[in-house]
Amino acid sequence: MAIRGELRRTGFFGELKAARYLKKQGYKILERNFRCKFGEVDIIAQKGEVVAFIEVKTRSSDLFGMPNEAVGRDRRQRYVNCARFYFYGRQIDCTVRFDIIEVLVGKINHIENAFTA
Image (cartoon, rainbow, N blue to C red):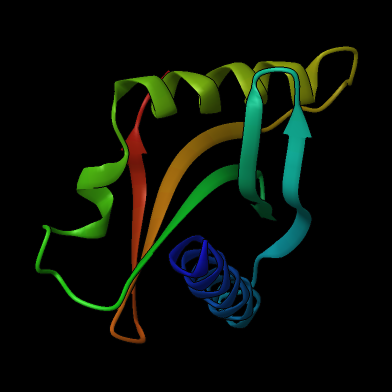
């Protein structure tokens, strides 16, 4: 259980770092850890007419590959379903984008349009 707690802590700090980065880039954080029946979205942020659903992957090394490689087909589909759920019944005119933010050894790599619906 100690490993699971350490992973949660690492993920929490990665998400915090990602949210700070997004704010500095001019994004407004709409939601953090948005949960619905389809899963959880780490960050939903808006910049101008774009609403981005952002998966944050944090790693302390690239020993097991780059963080974005851990976002597989199932996770991508969950994000698409969560976005549909988020907008259901709302009248919002915007462009929807799915991003990944890698936090690797404290450095941020923001991958815009990492995948499509």
